[in-house]
Length: 150
Image (tube, rainbow, N blue to C red; front, side):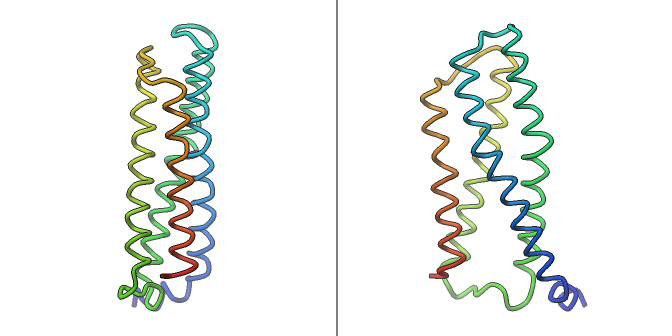
């Protein structure tokens, strides 16, 4: 059955999950930094604005979106693998809430890319700097949840 197959490929699923999460996190750390510099150093309609938009688009579409989807797919495969998740513990729920928050942050970043496309820099560089700390906090909660398993 499917459970047996998931058990057989567990180490591959876990490895692919870790790789995709690393790629996703790299994008979640880098895109807000691009937004900081875009906001502070580029004027709408300039060549520099176009370069930032190209970098942001490629990061989001070619790295972040596929790695987020892969993280979710492989993570759900792990959740469905028998014996991996102890639903009586707290850690699966703290991890789940953090993953939902990380996904919300990803979508927030994607929505704000449209501000740059429209030439309407609504938020300050300082705001993006502050928001850039969110994935770090979420990463810490996820890592401690999974490893300490409280």
